Image (cartoon, rainbow, N blue to C red; front, side, top):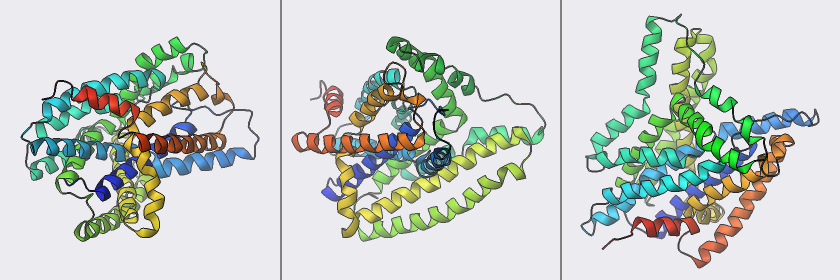
Length: 388
C-alpha cells in the first residue's frame, strides 16, 4: 500500500475518532461499572437516559468495530511492507501480539472491559489466512460475520422452542464487580479486574457474538488493505458512496427487525440467538455508515481540517486507550475519587469531553516532537528486537 499522506491521515483520523467515542462511552458507563446515583435531581434523570441512549445508538458496538477493522488493515500494511523487501511478517506479528497481551494485562488491571487482550488472542486468526487468496478470505470472514454458532443455537431452539435456558453466564461475574470496584483498595481492584472482571468480559464477548465478529472484521480490514480502499481515488470514492447507501438501507431494515423482534418471537430460546446476530449485523451496518461517511467527508475541503484533528489521537491510540483506563478508573472507582456514586450520564459526558480535549491537546503536542506515541515507541522497538 502506498504510504501517501492522504491514506495515512484518514486512517489515523478514523482511529482517533473511534478512540474518542470509546472514551465517551466508557465515561457514561463509569468504566464498566454501571450505577445510577440516587442523589441526582429528578429533572436530570430523563436527560441522563437520553444521553445514554444516544451515545449507545451512535457508538455502542460500532466504535470497537472500527478499531477491529483497522486492526486488520494495520496487519496488512505491515505485512505488505515486509513482503516488498522479501520478509515474512507473520512470525514477527505473532510476537507483536504477545507484546500486546502484556500491555493488555496492565490495562485489564485498571479496567476490566479491556479489549486489547481479546485482540491479542484473536489476532492469531490472521496468521493462517494471510497468504490465502482474497476470495477465500472473504468467504471465511463472511462465515464468521454470519454468527454460525448462534445459528446452531437458533436451529436447536426451533426444534424445541419451549426449552429452558439459563441467564447469560457473564451476569454473575458482572454482579460481583461491586465487591471490589466500590472499595478503596487498589490491589483488590487489580485482582478483581484480572480474575472476575476478565472472565465477565470474555463470557460477555462470546455471548454477544463479539468474538467471531472481531475475527471477521480483522479479515475484512486486511482485505480493505489489499484493495487499497483507504487510498484516495475517484474509484474508491464511488465504492465508499455505494457502501454508505447499502449500509444505510441495511441499517434501517435491520433496526426495524430488531425493534419488532420481541413481538415476533416469543420463545426465549429462539429470541436470544436471533437477537445476537441481528444486533451484530445492525451494529456492523451502522459502523459502515460511520466509516464510509467519515472517509467521504475527510476527502472534502470543508470537513478535512476539522476531522484531521483526530489524527494525532489515532497515531497514538494504544497510549490513549490505556491512558483512558488509568485516568477513568481513578475518577470513578473506589480506590480513587469514587465519582460513580454521584455522576449520571450528563456529568459523565462532560467529564468525558474534558478528558477528550486534554488527550487531544496532549496527542497533538506529543506527535509534533515524536513519530509515535510513548507506548507505541516501546511496542515498535520490542516488536523489531533482533531484526536484521
